[in-house]
Amino acid sequence: MIIESHAHYSHKRYDGTFRYLTGQLTAEKGNRDGLLKRLRESGVALCIEPAIDFDSNRLTAALYRQHPDFFRLAVGVHPTRTAQVPWRQRKQLATWARGPGVAAIGETGLDYHRPRHHRLVQLLWFRYQLDLARRTGLPLVLHIRMADRDALPMLRRRRRWLPGGVVHCFQGGWETARQYLDLGLCLGIGGALLRRESALLRETVARAPLERLLVETDSPYVLPDIPWEGSRKSLGRVRNSSLLLPRIIEEIARLKRLPPETVEAAGLEN
Image 1 (cartoon, one colour):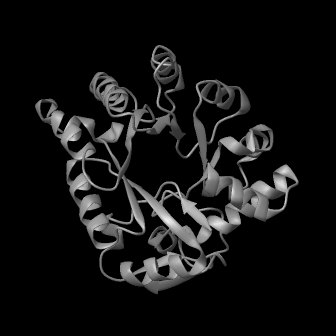
Image 2 (cartoon, helix red, strand yellow):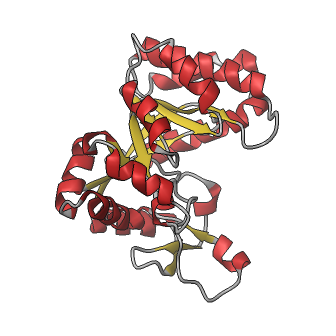
């Protein structure tokens, strides 16, 4: 039994008919309901669905109402979307956080991969969502990209009451990972682990405590390296899916020299 700790099945890329990645690293055609049915049959028991903006918070809530046995929600505003959400509406997040199925606050954090990309606005929203996690006691789904230098001090100043959570889509080295682990946070490990250029991440996963690892796919994003005979453009149209999770578990098991069943059971408990 596997829990997908981070995916976006309410995303418009799952509307209509689309091609999605399977556990065999092939692409098949289907729709959202068919894919969710296949996930259940493959052993994915639950999926955590983080929001990224206000429209997304509404879409995730609607998806939960359709599949309350399969989804749990994270309420938040993604750092790259903060400039698009009026600051005066921030208290709406607190209302949504009290809604059914909500298990976390996020995804929230800092994303500096674009030069000077609304950094002050990101910082304001990050502080607000950290405070919301404090007030609700809900754990955090953190999106930190090229911003550890600012994010870590903000988290350390709040370490007395941090409610836990996960640094999602973690791809950094051991020294950075250790600092997040010291704050009681988990690391979200996804398809990047299955890329050739991810030697640094593989070293981190090998050293990190198993009880602090969560598995994720960030579907529809973060595809692994896959054999592909078509064009880059056609590959870009393939959606990731949680059918990839067993492969991620197998790679973690290989790095830690453990049976995949042990890694799967630990991930479920985490």
